[in-house]
Image 1 (spheres, helix red, strand yellow):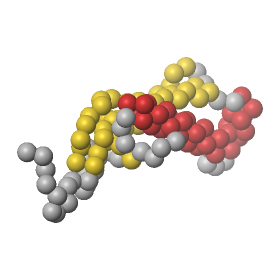
Image 2 (tube, helix red, strand yellow):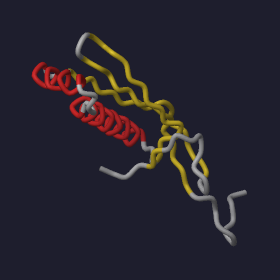
Image 3 (cartoon, helix red, strand yellow):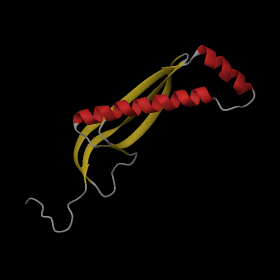
Length: 118
């Protein structure tokens, strides 16, 4: 996969936005595992970190990011600005991770000694 810059800011310092492609998004919906839920419930009783849920949400976040990047690359973007994450409960035992931003093509500004088209 080609490399794409992702930022939560509305611009990229040292770069000019050449083209804006619009909204891109990626989402992932994960469900819980009944056996692992029981183990996590037991761990919760003693105040332990709920590793299974942390891992599940991290995987959902990465999958959503990958899908957003694929969407941006299909449009011809090399960066995504203004990236935001949201998560929500979809149904009992499942959660959605949504990530979205604005796909753009960025380039460094012309350096000294270069002429712009007039």
